Image 1 (cartoon, rainbow, N blue to C red):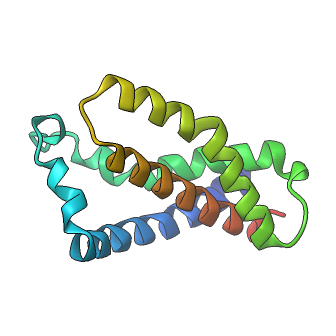
Image 2: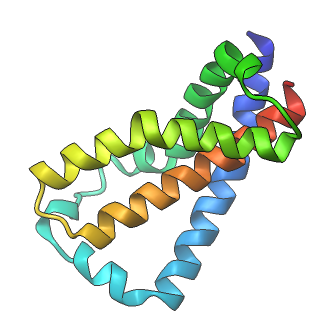
Length: 135
C-alpha cells in the first residue's frame, strides 16, 4: 500500500504541474476553445475551488491503485507500458464518461474531445511514472 500512496503522490505532483502549465499554454495558444466556458454551467461561487485543485491527486491515487492491481498486464519498456495504461484507462473510463457527459450537458464536441485528450495524457504520464517507480 505504501507504493500505491508514494507513486500516487509523485504522479499527483507531476500531473498538477503539467495540468496547470498545460492550461496556461492552452489558454494562450488556443483561446477559442475556452470561449465555450463562458457558460453558467461552469460558473462557481468559489466554495469548491479546492476540490478542483485537488483533482490531480485524486486521479493519481485512483490510477496508482489501478496500476498496482493490473501492472502485470502491461509489458515492454516503461514508456510503452505508460502508453498502454493510458489507452486502457481512456477506453474503459474516459470514453463512456465523455459520451454521457456530451449527451447530458450543453457542451461542445471540442470540449469533450479536449477533455478526452487531457485525460488520456494524464493517464499516460501517470502510467510512465508508475512503471518507473513501481514496476
